Length: 92
Image 1 (cartoon, helix red, strand yellow):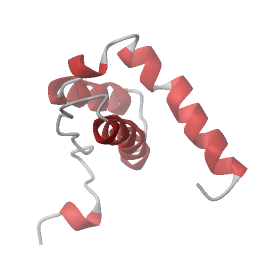
Image 2 (cartoon, rainbow, N blue to C red):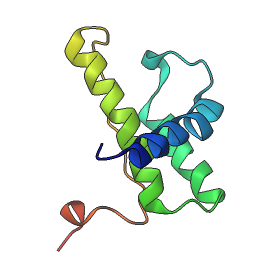
Image 3 (cartoon, helix red, strand yellow):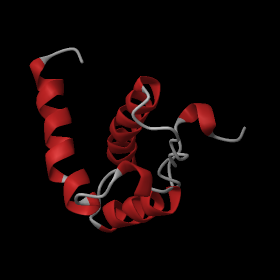
Image 4 (cartoon, one colour):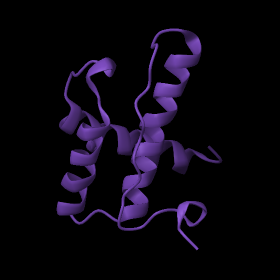
């Protein structure tokens, strides 16, 4: 993070969107199918695809840290918002 603005944005992203959808679900119960439902839910709320991808990237980072520390054995595949993939994942 480069500034306090990005910290505020990250905290807001966490508090406003992920917990209301995921609740108190354990990490081992968060599946790719559930994350696809999250994408559909956020798209229905008219969230920009880039915003959804940043939210998923935040969650993906948390899963990767937990996996590297040994707290979590397996992390599911994290999908991108399908309607607008990052440039590096688009077919040419």
